[in-house]
Image 1: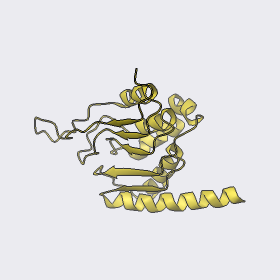
Image 2 (image 1 turned 90 degrees about the vertical axis):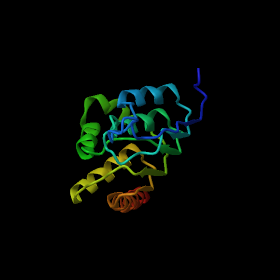
Image 3 (image 1 turned 180 degrees about the vertical axis):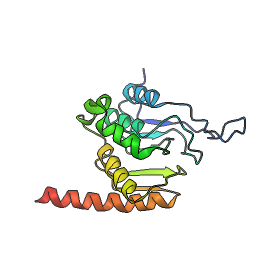
Image 4 (image 1 turned 45 degrees about the vertical axis):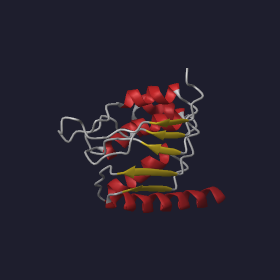
Length: 170
């Protein structure tokens, strides 16, 4: 019914009303995939500013669903859990469930804002996550959040995009 919707803003307080320091964002990866398939013309998706709780039921897998089903998206805010981000990205790249999605065109999201989403990575993890984020969002130029690791990830993504651009030029 809303297939032509281009903007979705859901303003919500992340904290649950019980004060349990749990993220109140109750969508799961499959829910986000269904949302993205149902609203393919979305250009702006704001499902509430990501929080520091890292208890969300969504993972980076939901980002791939958004990228392939909402190819016009230019801004994105969504909660997702980063506790196992490197393993989650590995599952996305190797899992048979995601192989078909990788062959589809992806959105041209230029900047990803993680806001207060926690991120702790070692050197190999930074490279793996930078590679995974560029695989999900091939046009990604910037990535930022409140935690230091997001700044380090931003540097890796910029470097990776420069190398890719050089390869394409010859």
